Length: 275
Image (cartoon, rainbow, N blue to C red; front, side, top):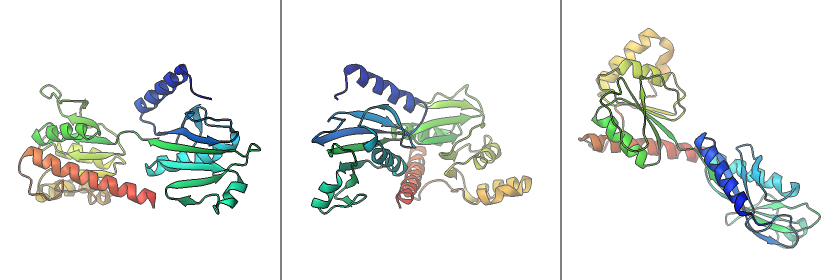
């Protein structure tokens, strides 16, 4: 069954809604069918992180389990999956086993009485990674601009919004009352250093860095640890000074080195999830 224009519009609206909420999902598209199947090429469905179909149609119950599993894996690893559902007789004839992957194609058994074959492409759609930047100086603004251009969801936290005008799709917040599981860069440079660092280590951020000298950071870390000894382990995980060592001098170069380090950490996390 090919999708009608209205169904395409509804799927698009649902996709935009999920993106707006920052929720991961997967788009499953029927690429090819052989013999009798309830789904036809062009059939589409949206699935959530648990593999449940939110909207659309890609076949009956015989196919949903395998497609749901493929969606869960695609969302977990961030990589698309190509799944071929085939009757057991065809798998045996071709020397294949259910659950086997060859040349990027994952094979699954289609137990439907129709004994049809269906190939489905499952593509993950993940929310933009969040980058929280504390500070309103030149490094902070340069990093906000660069992060926005590299498809990060950027939030700029400042002590005062009066004289700050970030460009692009950057969210501006007054104060350091943020929560995130993403990436945090403290670039306050004397304007609320301790408050920003204290808030950063209280979050579940996967990466925290501090723009400033090692000596300055060590002093701040010691003060925060004296206030709350429980912060010690978290503070030791902060990248200070922030960024990869590329002999950066200008604010733009420093911002580039920080984003490079964030990218390095982010990709390493993805590799770890795939293993």
